[in-house]
Amino acid sequence: MERRSFVKLGAIGLAASIVKPGFASEDSVANPVLSDYKGGAKMISTWSHGLEANRAGWEKLKSGGTSLDAVEAGARQTESDVKNRSVGIGGMPDREGHVTLDACIMDWESNCGSVGYLEGIAHPISVAKHIMQNTPHVMIVGAGAKQYALKHGFETIKTPLPEVKKEWEKWKKEQAAIAKKPAINHENHDTIGLLAIDEAGRISGACTTSGWAYKLPGRLGDSPIIGSGLFVDQEVGGAVATGLGESIIRIAGSHTVVELMRQGKSPEQACKETVERLIRKHKDMTGLQCAFIAINTKGEVGGFSVYNGFNYALKTTTQDELIDTPFDRKW
Ligand code: ASP
Image (cartoon, rainbow, N blue to C red):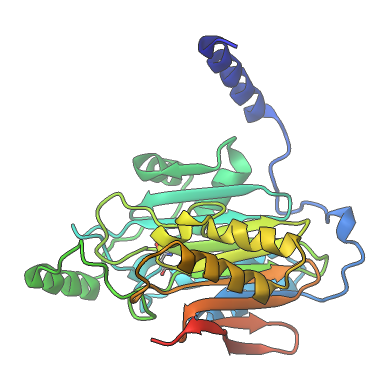
């Protein structure tokens, strides 16, 4: 087929899909395949701020909300936390002082939405969900994402926060070298990635971050990229990632975890093999922390990290706790 007619066909397809039904909605019916799920609702989220996020998500799950409602509510909780330096309003800026936010969301019907390089909007996760549910697209970034958010009335914020700006000014004075990879640890990198399974067995995931502190302007990490920062396939389960996004993208991390679960691995084993693959692809792992958490359709969960020190929060009807994951090596 000639490129021109192919492009034309593509345009017709796009126009058709704008009117085509089939985007997710909050009252989507349970996938019939899942009607025998008995594992109960469950939520897992990266790092200790996952505890509060899970509690916010749980409010949705216990009042009959879907896993999609739960992961969005959890992500919003962390996005509002002014003390969090890696997500939302309290996030660290890029090297020019702009806080640019990335987020994505995915549900059990493989609907997904994403925003990247979004500045001045309080809840990128909800913009991502809105894109997923109301446009034929998956990913909108930069000025277009901002325009989209404003047009649809999303809450605006002023960033960086004054105390964050001070830190950035100090950093600028110290002339820290951007080319030198900073250590990725709990202090400077702690994206929140969330996965939930609801009473009906439906799995959804979300991921939201301000990314690598003092990144080059325009940089996107793994977090807004479906398949890298997050992946859900209701035939198998879901996974989310945290850590150095450039490394996670290199192995399409979250998708890899899900595919390993498809081959029969447990969530923990799938995360472990993904971490091992990531390590194989890097000559120098000095300070390079990455971690994955995952859930399968039986409601089993697990995680694994490159270095010690990573944990995730687990919430069920009986549990509300932080779990240290197994790891490949010690700092
Ligand atoms: N993965 C995120 C990024 O590279 C950061 C993080 O997880 O801490 O932007």
